[in-house]
Image (cartoon, rainbow, N blue to C red; front, side, top):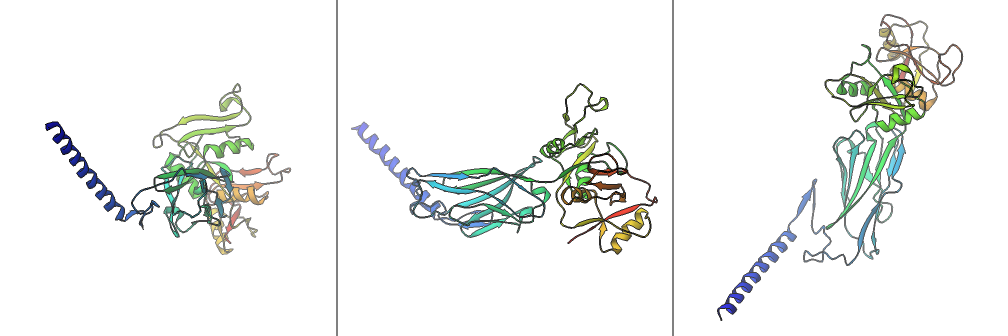
Length: 369
């Protein structure tokens, strides 16, 4: 009898514990939860008792194609669709989240969160993104006014109760890479100074993929420069003694990751198309740097930046065999159609470095639309 009473006592405790647990679960189900400013009830699509039954239904998320290309200031759609297998008769209410991982390797950040008809965008993407939602299951992300720093990997995530599936899509900007060093000479930039230098010239620090693509197109440069991931590299098309030696094959030479505060190098910058006009100002006289800035202002423009000149050469075919001042105090000119007396027999942006500011030359201006 003693053993039987003990078993009844243990069963009674178990029953009490189970009832208490069910009560807690029921109470939690009735509470509202919040995430990123959204409040919702029964987002788990349960049966009213806090239970979730998928009955063999599988949530699938796909992004095709995996890579999308765009240029600055354009609008772009990053594809993403979700579906259930087998398909459902009635649509389910899900939470959609888009996040962004920059090519520089910085921390992943939120882009957009959507629940039902409510959407919220974040950070640099605020008010520039929304979901397409053309058909059931289409949660493609539309980015308006694409910026240079939008290039990277995007994650499309769908959350339905305990189901959580995602897919990724890469956004790549078409543009041009150019090596840059400031007026005080070669190898003077820390990583942070390199970032500021590119930004000042309407550009960002290039990634390895962007440098590699530029090398494939013929970029050959013997000075090492920072890239967005903190490594220092340089592209060589024609091997030569001062640039790694004659025995090495063409390619990207790498110094590896360097100390971002102690080490100093040049930088490779990346820019995309310009939305305005870059032009050589036809002026009645040659201009020193101060006069050049003023002349562009009087023409309803501003003196052009290095990145703007490269973008106009790359995307608009700007061709001018006249050296002109730019905003950083350098002297350059763009050649799309190589010809005698206009430098080397290949297209590119020619540079005369940084002449003394009182020297007199022409000027390139930039006028926004």
